[in-house]
Length: 299
Image (cartoon, rainbow, N blue to C red; front, top):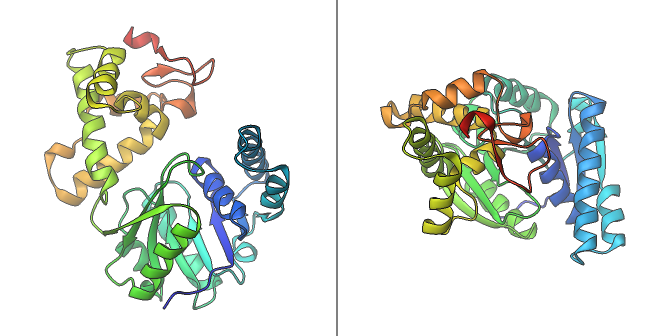
């Protein structure tokens, strides 16, 4: 069986949340975009509008498509109102276990019994998230990639109690969004970040130990391994704080020292250098992200 999805709520209007809302709304779903502040929601709509304008300029969508997409999004600062009568909730809040558990406890009270609860978490256990609800069979991971409107992959993470019906529904729904879903089981880091984060961490160690510089490390991986973006630049785009959080989940989940975060990464996050979001990480983004400028500390 496949459940019919018409109305979707997205919790969190940051980079991932506004991208997820954009993708659903563009594919004719009614979307409730929820955040704690009006300012965050205004910024999200500005971002979505800019991204739609870019699609229009490239001939990917029409002006009518743009207007339809924006009309399909309604903003809320009240969680209970935002999730009323929706068929699916996609949580895209901070990658913090305590925050996610509180959200899912509230969702369990505020949503209909049949509403599917999905998390866009990049590493936190779906089984653990589901354990604070009364319907763990309807809790699932829906891990989109950044930038959401562009990237095709959706990791569909099946928790210990997630039902076949819900898994099939989310796999089918992902295809409706023009994505390619891949079903994975619920273990720390899933597939994408279990493989990606140790590579990024090793790249940071390579810099930390003085083997090569920032630009040299990224160039080797781009030209030698055909990666479109070097691991240090990619870490900046993901957010160094997010990378650190995922590595901590992997380290705790597997108890294996190979997942221990490089001290340089820890220091950079503690210093507030989190990559693109803060304006500086391994590169400096004061003048935007198109021209790569190595951060002064690493020159």
